[in-house]
Length: 510
Ligand SMILES: Cc1cc2nc3c(=O)[nH]c(=O)nc-3n(C[C@H](O)[C@H](O)[C@H](O)COP(=O)(O)OP(=O)(O)OC[C@H]3O[C@@H](n4cnc5c(N)ncnc54)[C@H](O)[C@@H]3O)c2cc1C
Ligand code: SF4
Image 1 (cartoon, rainbow, N blue to C red):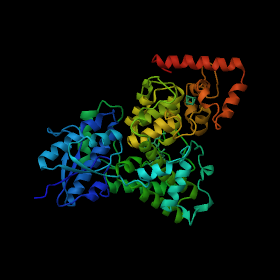
Image 2: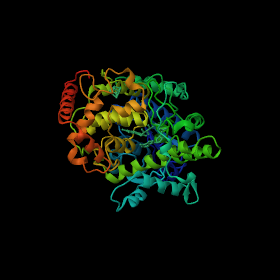
Image 3: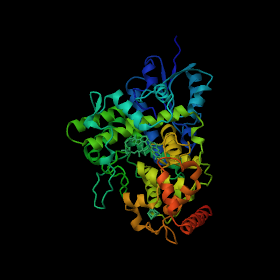
């Protein structure tokens, strides 16, 4: 008899189109899926994130069985669960007398290395859910002095034909950001996000997660995530109808009590395989062609997916396994407790952390210009920042989280993802949000008792990293402005910034 092969399907590979399933023989092979402790707690994941993945895995396994596949599924609380992916593969290899594994390359170096070490014959297939393969990205990057997303994005537009009119971009421009990024007014009326009442599978998972991971940062209930493809497609349709038309305009806006605004909230589904990036973009393009969404919004949205999402993945794999540990600016401060919900007087930080706890979600500008900006200005160790982002967001997987955090947000890769550090004073936050209105600090005060910490820390950052950034063409004007200021003023700001950071490090409420 021909031996069966084990077909590994990981928790973020939940599509029948995944390469390993395509390569498998339905009649011969056994699909291996496993809920394992090693994956659930290598960082303290938000309970909502764990519940999403486990519920979606269980439903996907049931769908595979319904189409006639043999599935060996391990539940987290099974008494013989081996606790790790390699352990589960070895256990199943013995049970089915199999010695070959068919896998789709995992999205994380840690697991790639673990599979490579297995004493089984491994047939690894590239993860072709992405538009740009690892080798294609490496070829594109080869010989370039710097990697810029915008140039990569244009290649992806040409490759996919999305928003193209022949060889030219639709409407004549590649990028419509000049029309985007408006602040939202207090009476803005964003669409209600779609939410799904837990069914029996989800309910069981919620009980399990509560029991095992109830101590992790984050609210498990209420739980309304989509947990299968049908539901995820509903979220996409809902976004295209209600969110996309204003996505561009308010992409960077932040409003207290409105965490999602006109964002799609589809990254958790894209990243585990319930939605396909190309289908998402094609549906958005169709909405534009049908006159249901403007070009600035459609282009801006598609750029995030075929541009940024593909670009950061390319960088993650190009740069190698040490990427997440880089610390180009040598920042060493520990992550303050306020990231885990500790008290703070900064209204913007309190708002974004509270919403993260509740929803396992924050939109891009909240991640970049509030929590990320603060960590960078305060000189927090990027490895700790990375671990926080990887833990608390429902969409966080290392291939996408690390380049965004370590690279774009913390400049810890020395400028591979970002050409200059994303830092700002309170001014930007005041312009793009209404957070400052209810803050104990005064965003207009540049120094003194009530000065907004972002104002103090901004100049402190600029001053202490002069050697690295002074000659950056995009930052010269910042240094000119700093140097023009009165010497006493500068000294006072630096002194106050240090005193403020000292309070932060001592665990005082700041
Ligand atoms: C510090 C930091 C950490 C981040 N960590 C993650 C992460 O772990 N996982 C993750 O998917 N995204 C991450 N992002 C990117 C971005 O914030 C999220 O993709 C986005 O907020 C998801 O919400 P949404 O679906 O409503 O996105 P929308 O704003 O509606 O955008 C649509 C889609 O575009 C894609 N996208 C947008 N920006 C990016 C980007 N910079 N990189 C990759 N894809 C992008 C996402 O798939 C997203 O679903 C991070 C950004 C920062 C600054
Ligand atoms: S004043 Fe400063 S700390 Fe307060 S909300 Fe505004 S930017 Fe944040």
